[in-house]
Image (cartoon, rainbow, N blue to C red; front, side, top):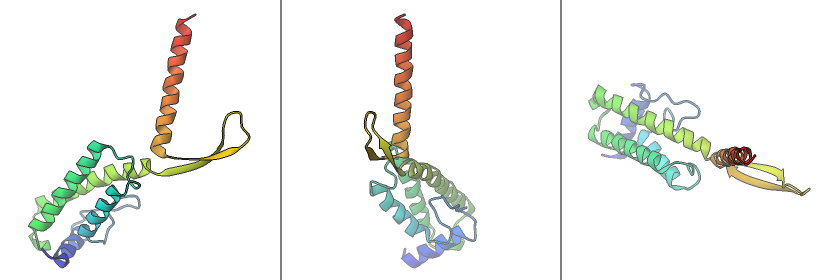
Length: 155
């Protein structure tokens, strides 16, 4: 199937049938060809930055959904030949990709802060992803709880 047919099908899906409800933070953008967006997402999945905090099982779910979407686009070359059930499947797969990757993109966002180390007057820039910061906070909370339990049982 040539690129023009794919673009026509994608345009149809994104506009006429209401398949995508692209919000500002969603992965799929209304008005852009679906095939191009799938290709862009593939690049972002492999760049090591955009979705660096994406778990392996979530990455598999996204790749499976994108594979199903590609098969559907190849199977129905004309926009009028896509049955309602296939449109619904495309919509559902887009929602899987949007949901998983929107959260992963947020978790992978790099946040830099200038912080003074304990016992020092010098500030150091510390850059961590949002997910790394959350893990550090949870680890500290867990260590504190463990220390409190050990401390209270030794009395």
